[in-house]
Image 1 (cartoon, rainbow, N blue to C red):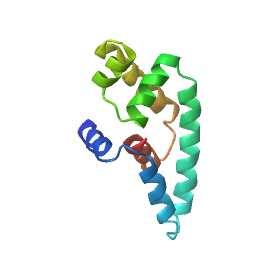
Image 2 (cartoon, rainbow, N blue to C red; image 1 turned 90 degrees about the horizontal axis):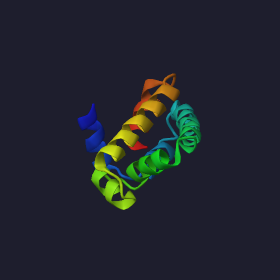
Image 3 (cartoon, rainbow, N blue to C red; image 1 turned 135 degrees about the horizontal axis):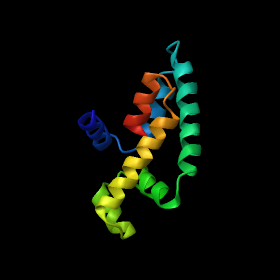
Length: 114
């Protein structure tokens, strides 16, 4: 699963692609429902991320929004690479726990592209 996630993260660094895909496929009957679910999940995730400790939140956002790897984040924030990796692991674990009740497809889209 990590290899798949890593592949897509490298291919798609901008989550706007997912939003564009959702907008482009509105003609399909259940896409509207998926769009609503995705946006709802995104809003919930943003609230959860906002509640993270400041350093963990910064590490997570640099990783997901700017596509930086642990080494790059460590250099930018003047932290040990292991510290950055720990923050990322804790952030992802926390998000998975808080969002565990979501549908598989929406969760997959979120994990791959957010």
